[in-house]
Image (cartoon, rainbow, N blue to C red; front, side, top):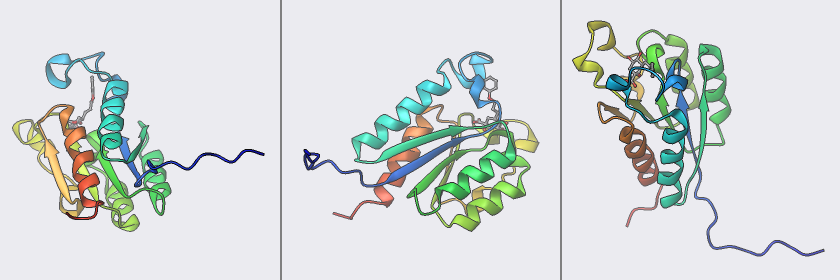
Length: 158
Ligand code: CA2
């Protein structure tokens, strides 16, 4: 039996990119607000950013709060960090907050839009104070910045 050839490009870890409700609609509605890129484009951008730094990126989107909680739990012991755009659950979900706190993984809260320049109810986040970083208003580039930040956080310092 032939053994797999050893490689020098072993993964340095996995970064989970989680998207919440309605983000599956990216690129199909409200382009003036959310741009023209699709969720697949966002996920590919995040994967490319991870690969450039030696990290795998796994992506998951759900419109259901419990499914997002389950995905966060599943990341424990598997991922080195979580990029989270919880969509509207950002402003409502104690359950997602508790899940992020429970797994004790560094999380980066991402929003495509600048939530602070929008309606008052979007100004409060249940996630910001338990996140390592918050990125809002940079469009889909925010996902890239978040992956790069988590890659840096999980790399030996020069
Ligand atoms: O700016 C963001 O990324 C948000 O997390 C997006 C959420 C919103 O509830 C948050 O306040 C800010 C909404 C996601 C809706 O996504 C759509 C994408 C395309 C078309 C329609 C909705």
